[in-house]
Image 1 (tube, rainbow, N blue to C red):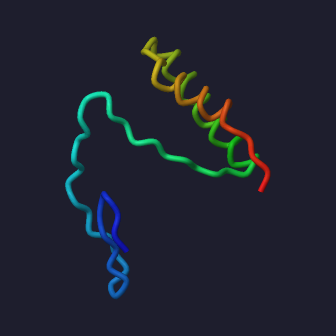
Image 2: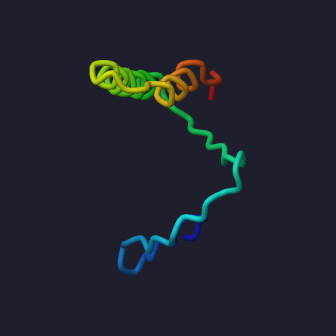
Length: 79
C-alpha cells in the first residue's frame, strides 16, 4: 500500500515513513473524514478541552477554534 506519506510493508506489518514534503504556501490538502455522530461529539469535546487548557495558559486558541468550527459545522450526509 502506498500513499503520499509512506508505504506499508504487509510482510512485516510496519510502516516505512518518508520525509514529509512541504506544500507551496497557501496550498493545503483537503481531507474528508466521515464520522458517526458520537465520533464527532468526541472530537468536539477533545478540541474544546484543549481550547480551555490554552485559555487557562493565556495562549492563542485561533488554530483550535478554526478546527473546532470545521468539525461542528461539517457537512451532514445520510449514508
